[in-house]
Amino acid sequence: MSTPPHSIGFPRMMKEPAEKRVFLPEFIQHLANAGLNVFIEEGYGSRSGFSFDDYRQGNERVRRCSRAAAFRQDVILVLRSPTMDEYALIPSGKTLISMLHFPTRPGRVARLAELGIKAISLDSIVNDTNLRLVENMKAVAWNGLDVAFSVLEKRWPGLHKPDGSPIRVVVIGTGMVGKHAVEAATKHGNDERNTAAIEANKGGVIAHAIGRSLVTRASAMEALLRDADILVDAAQRRDPSKPIVPNAWLAWLPEHAVIADLAVDPYTPDTDPPVVRGVEGIPQGSLDQYVFEPNDANWSATIPADVPTAQRRTVVSCYSWPGIHPAACMRHYAQQLEPLLEPLLAKGYDGLSLEGGYFERALCRATLRHWLDVGQTDFRAR
View 1 (cartoon, rainbow, N blue to C red):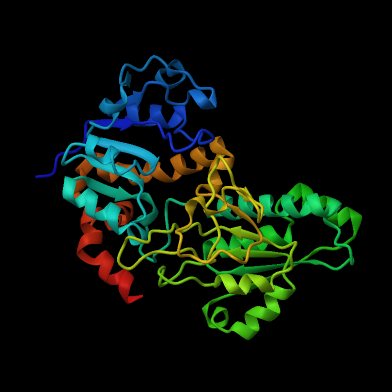
View 2: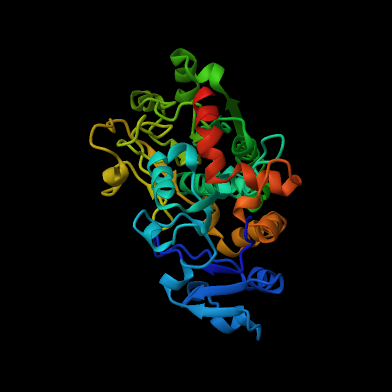
């Protein structure tokens, strides 16, 4: 019989100094009032201005603890995945909830299974029509495009192109991120900038959204890229072992063009099959650095040596685009998570079933056991 969890741990995310995302005090109180003992790592939220008292609010179920203790609770909730070494801090049989990205992290999947960790991947929580229930796609698109337009704005004050023509944006991918990217592009990356452009009555933006049927046609892509001011990768690839835009194609982009990387898939050359970036030869950014000029000293830091990088344009890339505005991001995630956690708290990990209610079914699909049973087969068949 499955045992419902009695405690939940919140370890800090320490991937880079600029990562300030933490779950907010109101979410911690929600879990404590639901009957969980909540263990918060010492210093949690301090970089965002929160103290332990902000989290506790006199509630004795909310407790301060060491990092190791946070990882020992029945459930561990942390937005970005712990490192491979940190998985060893989680006892076998405990439940880790995080953005684990099962399809593109086979090594991570193997390690979790080896350690007996009952993992739930936030990015794999989907409803009955395959729509993600824990996502911030709008923030990915708008934050990324805001940065891309900011780069152009430094070159063209007021975003007025020298020849007076509209700014041209090519968006690869028409899924959730791609749809938001098209809207963000046509509004110059933010509403304030868009209002100013309307009042100035100059320029404007033309956005082209393209999908799989066109990206494999080199001649068609050349025509689009030669006129593009911003190239956006918002694609969810069926085969992450192959790039969508080979590095050689970047030579078709104008020198001033900006590549907005919204997909942010990693390079994992040691997996079978290996995973590469959608746009070949570009760096993967972080909250510490998300703008890379072509001559940036850090350009190759995240790129395997055998990946071609000769053709370069300015790249904006961030592993966590929503993290640029941390409080808004975490409030959004908490609202999505509250109803999803209810079946887990009632039934425990092993009690989750595809025969349960709406949120239980969605949560069950995101479990490691479900991925090991059917997920890999489904993914490779796509």
